[in-house]
Length: 297
Image (cartoon, rainbow, N blue to C red; front, top):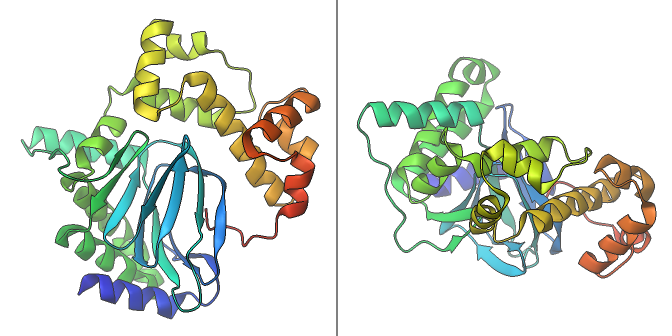
């Protein structure tokens, strides 16, 4: 019942394709009524919950499709290709995007550990390094509904928004993706910290040795653990993050040269070569081909 009510709330608040702000920090609604092919994107730490239709995400060449039977939990920034190829007026996509706040998630994990609460291992959910899928359970559905119901009143958002968002985070940690999320947001996850640092410093030179040093590991150990967490080597990950971010900036109207510099490329020719190798077309061709609605990655 909660999921149906969530869909009704979204339908009543969103009137065009794309992302719509709810007034609650980090919480957005989205709709798509036309197919959007998978395109380069970066999933920031977040949960994406579909209430109608389906989305696709491609990570390191492997395709995942998810719908209203399970939500996606992505606790670390991940370079993906994402889209809604099956969306249509007769089969619209409706969903909710919830950003995961590092501080709040970490505080909750610590409080749960102090209180003796257990975080369950996922059973039977689809598993991909980088993100997890979790079944909608009653706690998640109820918490998400209670959060979205605040959107009708700025006063309710101001007074109750933080508490309701915290309740949703708690439901996520108690659900099938809880262990995965706790491993990413826990104080000891050096790989997650490395990814967060990298995401914030894409335009700066960075070496694998420096990332390994920051993580307190040898290069070999860091390489192995990084690939276990993301499916990609550190070098592949850095390149994918830079190129995906550049592609998004170009799609948003930035010039090719500006986008290349924004993500740390000093050589335009190197950027063009690596871009074409990854996406099958030059940055100029990519720029000319972009007629997609923004914000539906």
